[in-house]
Image 1 (cartoon, rainbow, N blue to C red):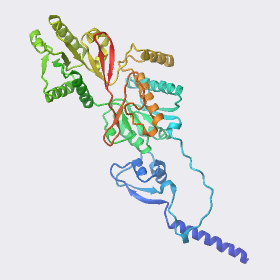
Image 2 (image 1 turned 180 degrees about the horizontal axis):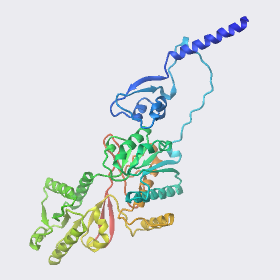
Image 3 (image 1 turned 90 degrees about the vertical axis):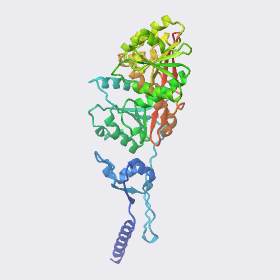
Image 4 (image 1 turned 45 degrees about the vertical axis):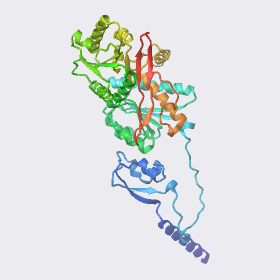
Length: 459
């Protein structure tokens, strides 16, 4: 009986000591009050935690629609689940078998996990174009596989009316290395917050009005807004034509969106002390002729991109050069002119036309022909007849980005020369914007030479 009582007292003492020890310190290091603009990812990083460790300590973060708000209090666990050592008189050491922590291989030693979050349907033009873009991504993954780079790709149909927050509840969304999307501006903010909290790269491929790239270091934005492009085009125009006499033709197009470019160009010329001329498409022959220099080469700029005004402008320039064959005239265009190549090709060659753009595919090149043929074999139809081929765009984006992640992992920045990929249509090179993400700075001139060649000048 005494022996049994002895064991009972020992067990009671053991339980009391163990309970006292656990009461002396919490499994959480501290409560953190959330500050403005703080994110789950940033808080985890500052406390040497993984995002998952922080979420495990705060299960409410897994609730649908959860948002981290200023003033919230969240629990900060100890790094790697390690608690501080208790006082010697309060510890009871019990040897327990431990499960080894599984460390996931770096993406450079495994498949690259790709997510596509775009409208993938056949209801309207947006969906059809994005389906073609997605097919280009699949073709890039197939080409990369032949070069020893594996991919795990998952796609979600994120249409214009889709609440992308519902899509992001899918567990597979959180394990991606890169997500391509979205197409619509209103979906950028929730997706931007999601990739930041899960440390995922986000490639925004097309035109959006959101400014998240300026704050979120995980975003790679391909699209450049109009003001950014106008300044870039003006800079390259000045470098190429600073020894030319510039003639700006007012085309009386009240719908034109090219006033931003011509205004920026005029400011640059005036700041550099360069004289230029302005004329009107309705000007008489004599007034029109007076605007051209007989001692310098001339470069003509229209303030519209429309085909009908371009027809009239070429007619007037042709009439002028017939009466003054010694005049040197070249013409500077707009990306929309790429749609008019068949109609104006002879004049493009004749007047040494340069068209600024962020993309171009020479339809006569072998690479373009091979791609079109493979697309037809794979999907039993041709790409849609846009001047920008969306299937090729998807291929260029995916090949460049997935290969970059395979080579550099999370250190991939998309800077010029990192990947060594020659695009079929869409050049890419990214630069960091302040403390935010990466913005594509690639642009080019499509040059129609007088000896009937088409060359691409990349910047």
